[in-house]
Length: 365
Image 1 (tube, rainbow, N blue to C red):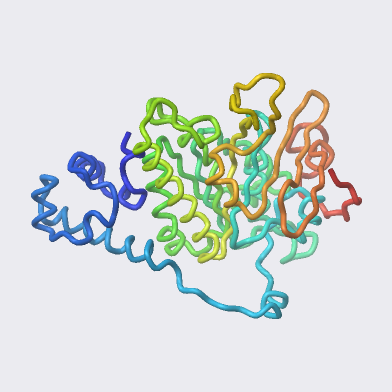
Image 2: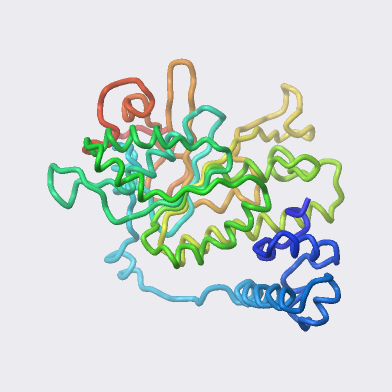
């Protein structure tokens, strides 16, 4: 319930202070910025030292929330001559189509149904982002990049990543080195997820080698949680008042803003997996009858829909496993056969996961 009541910035406080703030009616950083430590201590029943800790945190976050990052201007020539870094995903045709990989400095989303391969591709990215063949031609090695893998569903399998790394690098020692460059954190609740996202910028400041942040998945805790859960598309809040819905939407909007700002300000790639839902254009919503027009959309609703700069859909049917480039400023919509491109990853062949990318044929959907 705390996740629906407390500003995402304040969830970084210790649990006992979070509860005290909620019970005293303080939900936003701006609610406490103007108070003295003694006044806040009396309101929440804490020590003046603890109250001052909350106020200091609130003031630091409130300034950022109001003013944002400094605005910088660049020329088009500068953008052309100094493009953002491209990080290989490890799918040759996709990397070639994207100009070398996914772009740093932005949020990229991959969405699909359960079991379609979102986590498998995320683990492939965590390995391919670190591995490189460029330093010593013909000799696979590791770059100095690190990856932060945030696991909300408990689906990360280190043994699988080791298999992928071994397929890329061909050396057990190199594969173990690659694993040591992947930082992992397990998130168990909405509150933990919001608190972690709020602290990501400071974590990346302490670990500047992290160039890829993987959030697998963004929707799991935000769509679950019993009485405080969102509707299936993230835009409804069944059986709850508008006040709870507004607080939840505010917390989600803050999290989305922090992820976007993190990618832009730290020059890293933020890779997010997401669930899908069915949206109907009829008045009956997702439960509408056969006459209603329906389409598959990413979860978390319109609030999230425009956040990712690039979006991929992954599919898995009985006879086809594919990845659709649905939205990209640098690549047309193309459909990639993952069974052909990533045979090792999906168990359909013996080819390497990472190989020399080939120019994709002109195929659009």
